[in-house]
Length: 95
Image (cartoon, rainbow, N blue to C red; front, top):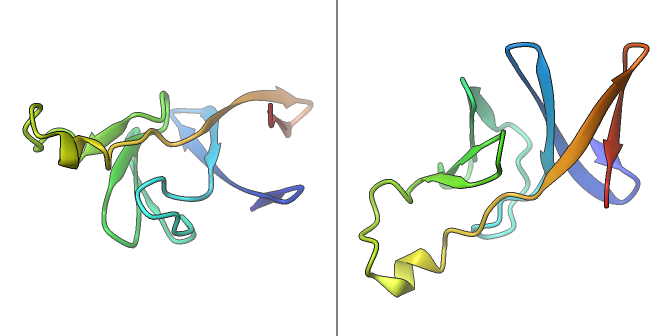
């Protein structure tokens, strides 16, 4: 979905709504068609996975060696936004 000129992904995890940037920080590809597995969103392009609660990279961070800086540079977090549900409507703070 789009909020103004920004692509945004909404995820419902156990009844709580999360809003995230709609572009994967790995290579900037859109997250249209991404899969949600429990609290992880899986990018359809390269299967980078992000925790929707925090935006932090889960995969491949969990398999990259921590001392290998070149690989660590690929692990930018996914942008997260504050969400409020008002009378059944989802409001996203894009600040």
